[in-house]
Length: 131
Image (cartoon, rainbow, N blue to C red):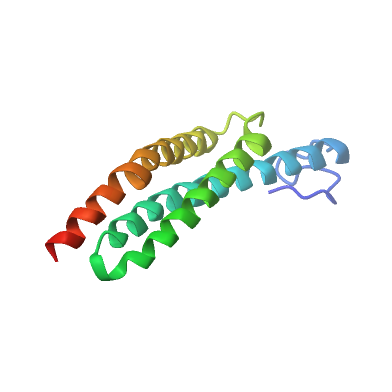
């Protein structure tokens, strides 16, 4: 690990340019944020379906509002991730995993449109008639 106050590399004693060290640290910090945000995005998209499933239980229909809230939040987070991190220049394999997590969240969000707003009202209606 190299910090920006070092003049030489502690391992190979090569002189370090503080500007390049600061740029590398900034890129690594942004890459770490991209990984973290993409993982959180995937978790939020998954929880959207948990809210949708629980909202189908007749007495717990109010949980459907949690689905609607997470639906909007996931959309905002997808846009934010794309704007902030899509042009990140890194060869880190974790960035590819972050993009995959973002894509999974996008697919889940797209699946939520018909399931949450078309199928769910019909299922809710039929389940309320059964119970």
